[in-house]
Amino acid sequence: MDLTVDDASGLRDFYSAVIGWEPQPVSMGDYADYCMTPQNAQQPVAGICHRRGPNAQLPPAWLVYLTVPNIAASIASVEALGGKVLTQTRSSSGGHYAVIEDPAGAVCALYQER
Image 1 (cartoon, rainbow, N blue to C red):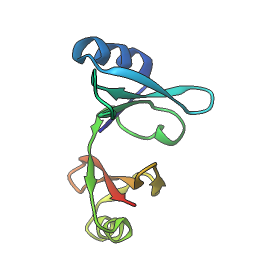
Image 2: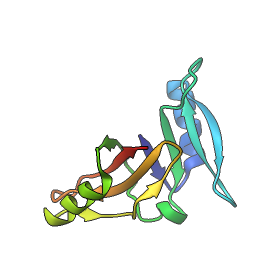
Image 3: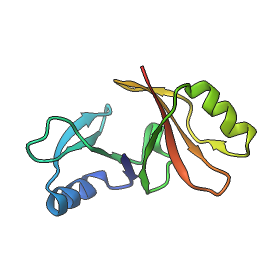
């Protein structure tokens, strides 16, 4: 899950203090977003991102990733059934994802593993 906000550095510090997550910066060019990893864990469990660049249009809410077997088919279904595609499909280290809004206005990401 990811959280996209105007002040990612401030929220990084908040969740680091409240939950104990250890931040790891992820370079976005002229700024950094953060992967948040629980203490003594090997993998991050969340991202805290600035609402800039490719994330500029995302709402300030925790974004869950829902796994789908075929992202192209799922995107087509979103559009056919009255949802909105908020971002184009993007690549990540483990697969592809796109942020969508369902007909009720709830936002999530669809994720297909490679």
